[in-house]
Image 1 (cartoon, helix red, strand yellow):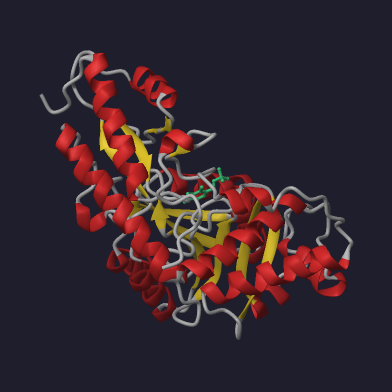
Image 2 (image 1 turned 180 degrees about the vertical axis):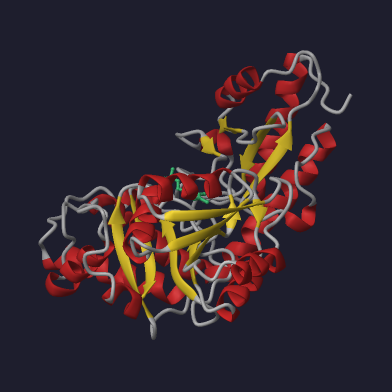
Length: 381
Ligand SMILES: *Cc1c(COP(=O)(O)O)cnc(C)c1O
């Protein structure tokens, strides 16, 4: 394995804190260095970079024969909104299995876009159940699409993409996958099932910097979607047509972000692609959970439901516990943690993704032990 250049570098020699967050995340020095150039948006050299990036992204989910890749300026949510607004017709109806904050966000987007939605609720501690989803589709033939979150980053839950894709295909509906925090790490194959679109962004598991999203969309569906979008800037069909016609982005592209993503993708390939990245993140996750357990912390999810992306830990019930104090002292030691996103349980999160390896996680666990000592907190006591 040809590891990215910062892997295993002791945290003491880093210029920046380690970002144990689900994006932005820690990027390699080479990825940062790719941004040290100014590029013209109509220049052939830049358009070549865009084409390479799109071809690479398409191949990660095996979409070369059936799908196209459309990049979109902005954070991941912009791309989710562009996909829903362009691919769901105005009289469509979308089933949203909901087991967390990012599923909730899809429901909000659909409400703003005035697309009808049907919520299928699950507890935050429970994965989406494909059988219940299929029954809901059978019960309501008016549902045209399912919008599904692959890894629910709010908890770190792995939702069962393959079973859901098969159920949606059997029922003859179309599936839009928010694969924001799973793309490039958990296998996705758009040749199977009814996958209409997969949405992700530059600054998550591909280890680029934030600033662009992308949608891998079924070609025929996108071709049929002219004039559907409620929005000019987020019209995926128009963005794609313009790109096809001119090789350029429709409006000012995030040139530095695109260049950084190309560099990050070449490191992804050099590392060994999806299997290698998945292996490294699974290792980070295992080392993290074991180390935190030794300190007395309990993960919110059982191991079997945990995606190797981000881990939610229950906050200790110790009277001296305050996440903001822990956060500040961990930041001073060079580690950025992430607050929890659960409504009913007090939690915090630690990411396993980014250009980091198990030595970084070990260093974080050591810093955590010191911090708990200083604060006089004994988790689990
Ligand atoms: C990060 C993320 C998004 C997009 O969030 P932004 O803040 O817009 O980048 C959407 N869905 C999931 C599951 C995510 O992890």
